[in-house]
Length: 166
Image (cartoon, rainbow, N blue to C red; front, side, top):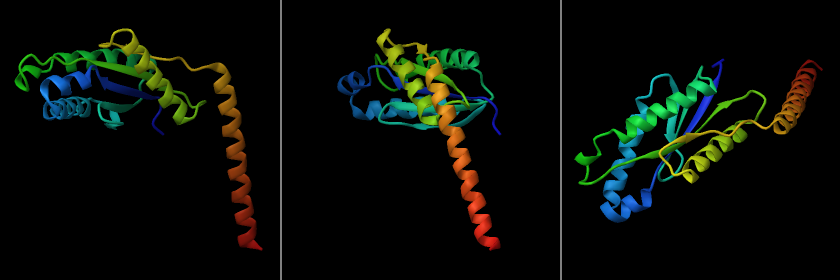
């Protein structure tokens, strides 16, 4: 239906420090501005927030390689934004975790990989993007679960159909 999907999880670096030094009102303004930047991203399917200072973007028809370049471009857009207009001395960076969603994994697992990528980017000092590769063992396990679920749905549909015709 959508082709390849990629998930980006974006976190503003040092948000608690921004709130302490500039105030919560400035911090809220930062989040709104970052959200606006994310909303303007072309080719996005969906974007939103996942917590106080964490946002996500889901893209269609985007490979992992393209997700990496898109993440790097987004990092530049955010750091080059006119933050000085909001508060003197304000400079904002962000960290991004990104993944290409595989049809062999559950959506929760893809999101967790993106969050792990975000954590890795923050551990490396922030202001960068990182990913976590899909683990083969997990893929095989999820494929088995998906097949069993599909078979259960097929059996349920058949039973419903049989009950309607009886």
